[in-house]
Length: 386
Image 1 (tube, one colour):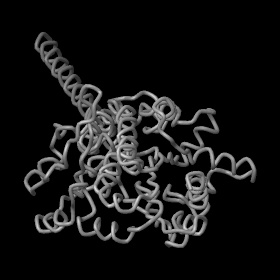
Image 2: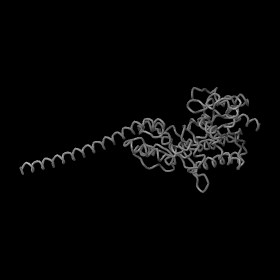
Image 3: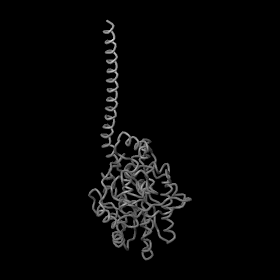
């Protein structure tokens, strides 16, 4: 009887141990499964965050031969090549008005031809040659340096010069490597201005070799390149979409100034205009002042042109506030002449009872109607100076 009780006790003990063992195993399996499920969920969500440019997937870098070909077509301004810049200058020579800017000035997007552009309409309105110095992707820094590069030619011919500031340029001014801003593999480097003691200091374009390109654009790179302030805002280096997704995606979202600005009801550039984060607004203001000072020093006539995006018009309609308000205040206080295309669009919307989408194409650039409004905005200024 004693032996039976003893054996029963041993069996019960072993059974308890087995139950505990199975229980622990189940907890571990449940934990691992939960982690796996969370990781899969974040992996699937990455397809959405990548599409919305909230995060960026690792991209395949260029081969060394392709990199060398690309670099041969760059210039001190970043892009395009020196030959293309010179061809553009020759094409626009002997004009009565020159407009410097980015892709909104260049204009040939969404199937539009040269006949649809603001420059064609303006040419007919003022009956003289119009110079289109728009280069896609330029920041205000590159636009100013492009103007400065051509200023010698104005000694012979003194056209009216327009310095176009598209609202989104403000974030490009904080950037030196276009790929880190947009999340693509192109090694496009550009010059930029920083502020030292409230004065602009030019940081020249970074002359990349293939080794430094791989180092800067490599997915494992954690440290931002020097003077690349977009890493503090939203960039390929800081907003990563990679394993472990359950760590990198939340980190990317919670460290992004871009996401924080959206949650507060602003697009990123509107937030920068409002807060002057990283001296972003001050840099735009000082570049505009530097441009106008260059005109005055050479007895040229010109104006600063402000161009909104579709999101800016929507923001204004909703909040009754122009995103350019702080920049406009600076221009007025420094007696810098300016024209704001925002005002022209609002006036036409009111008269024709139309929507802001009419003035912008699917890509976000100006539509045919938007180019007509831009030409009228510039023509009104030019005719006052004639």
